[in-house]
Image 1 (cartoon, rainbow, N blue to C red):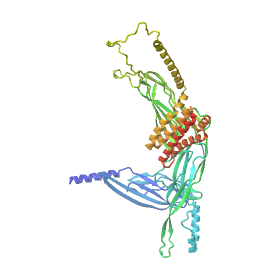
Image 2 (image 1 turned 30 degrees about the horizontal axis):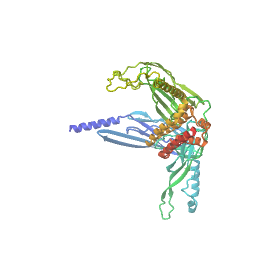
Image 3 (image 1 turned 180 degrees about the vertical axis):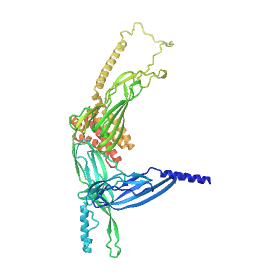
Image 4 (image 1 turned 90 degrees about the vertical axis):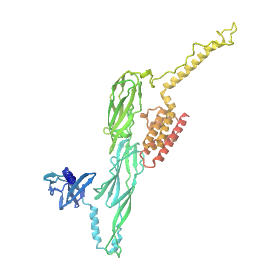
Length: 612
């Protein structure tokens, strides 16, 4: 008995606590309606203890019905947890009287003995649909006609004005690498239930799709004298890679429209209706985009960045011991082609061991490009004590707002490095260069026994041929050694020649890495590695820094070296395929294999052609 009473009390306390939750008083209505169209204005309260709301004066609308009161209650017990919810809804029917944008002020309701206010609403009233009014008048005039005339009109016909799609660009004139937004929008005056299709292949762009909500919502819009239900279907941010007038082809879609048609069966005495599905082909208009080249006078360290950016830096420590790591952190923030820019290079003293930078993109896609931060961390280890200066890192970009190149510089840091301790047992660390130990001959030998060969009297080693050869042969070997070393030093001093000589070997190593990424189907990393291989190979082969490389100066240098025009075009095709295939839809595996084989073939042909 006591247990039952306690259980009941706990249940009542829990329900009371649930009822004591925060009160909400929310107003809701459509965002847009047309003139003379009805709409429902609802006020939702999360408790039954409320009186009818007191409405304010509402401009532009008339209340023709309401309030209609409805309420709902529910109680749930899950794992001993009791939850209760109560909902009270007041619904009013309004009619829009005139065109414009009107604000519905907050209403007041007495809830649990206290006054609460709802949120205000803004509703846009569109002009009346002229086409709908004309259609209604036409239908009224046809009602007096014969049945044959009614049958002549096809009720399932969908005009191009009833359902169509548009493709728009938020800009028509941009610079290379400047973001431009491509939007596909649906306009429907019929019951569209399905839409299928995809955008065409867009050459000359790096493409990034904008993530839209999975549950798309229709809205009302007045367009060319008619009111349509509209929906934002797809959006893409395009980064043009080439200059000139680029045409964006039409996109083709297929829509499915559900319609209810009246039955003309003479035996159907009740005048039933049929439900039919109609397929409608939709085609967006072609668009043209004027892409300008970036102005002349690019800085030497221009990284290809276009947009608006800022640069900040930090050093993990300014006082360390030898063999302790320090981290230089660069943060590039702003908006633009953030994901496509090259990583700036940081110069460290020669006595530092420097690792490849770690790059992290903390960005989001917006209409004007990628926005956020690009974080770059350089890990370096000083090997000897002393005072070192870490120079500033330069980052150049083209500013969209001022239409000028700008160069940002990080801070210059001074690093104090104390002499590090030796490891236990006097062991030399692995990174210190070591001399090989030479085994010395034994200075105490055993007494020889048996017959010992003796030299005849009068025969001396001095001035003999063997004696002379002992001097001549080492001198000749030393002279050959000096000549070989000098030639080697001259070759090493010519850095450009060494890079040209080793270009093919470096490219082969990178292609092996790309092959591994291909097998693992890591698409983004694969295309990055292929492009690094091709650009790095041409940089080494032509002795041009990567930051100054472009398709134009590559073509000019190869022409001077006697490379055929067909081979130059083949190289451009491989670069374009690698850049475009990363975001292009289709069979990713087949495209990756094709790009990989094309890269191997063009490097092989280029190697043979330049050697000749």
